[in-house]
Length: 99
Image 1 (cartoon, rainbow, N blue to C red):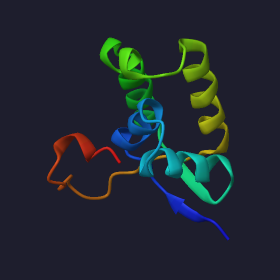
Image 2: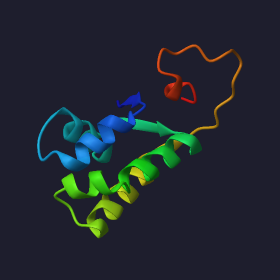
Image 3: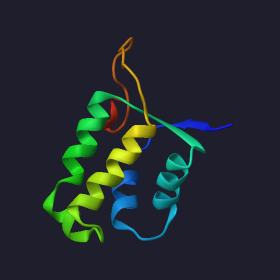
Image 4: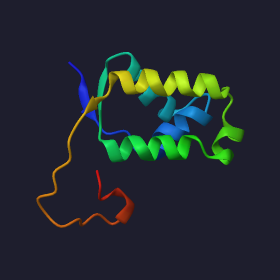
């Protein structure tokens, strides 16, 4: 049985730029089917934006093509969800309120 999770952008980027560590393990488990990541259109766009930043690309040991392949593999195992707002956003980090 797998766990349903939301992968924070910092975790996804940490997995791209780090060769080892917890972030890489989370991504690995998603790709192995041990975790079921859920994603919304807004989160997808944030992943895309941040992963293409020059500073991230410079830190990443992967080529641009390898980054694209890894992200596409990750997206292929994600369950896309529609976000419905039934209450006022209230998270401490205003940038996370779309989740």
